[in-house]
Image (cartoon, rainbow, N blue to C red; front, side):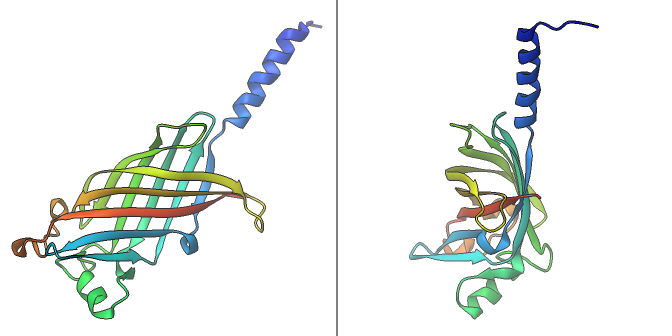
Amino acid sequence: MIKIPPKTLWAALALVSGCAMAAPVNYTIDPAHTYPSFEADHMGVSFWRGKMNKNSGTVVLDRAAGTGTVEIVIDLASIDFGLPAMNAWATGKDFSNVKKSPRAIYKGTLEKFVDGNPTQLTGELTLNGQTHPVNLSIQRFKCVPHPMLKRELCGADASGSFNRDAFGLSAGKDYGFNMDVALRIQAEAVAAP
């Protein structure tokens, strides 16, 4: 029989339990509590603000290791400005071109962890059949036990911007519209059972 010194045994147990605690956790985006929204210029005189009502996605998070990924799929036909005529125009070929590309996809890597919480998403947005880098700053990130599901619930509020002309969506450019679009994603995700 091999004798293992107690210190070695405790060190091995600590290493094994530490590895188990550092395992990545998979989360599913809760579409009822996730609202990608945006703000776009209207000739320099006002801003159009809208949100997308249908989305899905996943998050993989390892808070102990300070790593993670995010993927959010947005149904562009669900654009909602609160005005039906504007919604119809926004799904057209000049603004979001839903017929050509019905979904937008954001994929990012969670980075710059502080006290176990990410503060930045470095990623790419696919829109209108084109993919370009879009980084998001995370203003808030928190995980709590979900009171009804008895699983971990994480929420975040992230924001950034992109140039829609770079994606081939240049409606209003000839009339002096600013092509920069502010993007904000407030999201909640529940740990997989």
